[in-house]
Amino acid sequence: MYSEIGGDSNSDSEPNSRHCVSFEDIRKYTMNYRNLIIALSFYALLCMVTLTTIAVTAYNYPLFPFQSDNLEWNNRWLIATVVDYYGACFCFCGIVLSTELTWVRGLAWVAGFCILGSPVCCLWMLLWLWRGGGSLCLERR
Image (cartoon, rainbow, N blue to C red; front, side):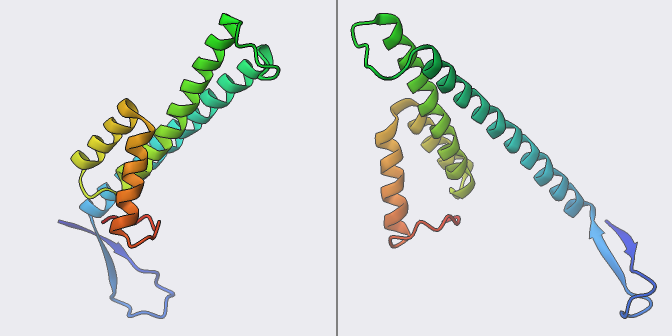
């Protein structure tokens, strides 16, 4: 089923030409726009959380001089480091989810990144480079 949108009457095109836009096209555009807003909101919030966590920790517990014998200092920096890791990890997860061929495969990689950490991230990069002939071009494969 199509909805017809008439062309501009002052255009150089044929007078009876009409542009047809399917409801499916409108739905896809709306979904893509909604997904973009959700992603932008998520990553903006993630940026604020990671930046605030690191800034507050650095202000209240300066990194230098190292205070390895101070339990509170170590605890705060451990928390800041974990928040920092997951901030970077979630950004990487967004790239992987948008480039993997299937959601199941993408979610399996994301679970590996979040549970097992950097070794799985490195493995994904090695496989990506191997399949792409050494290119980091982020297109679906």
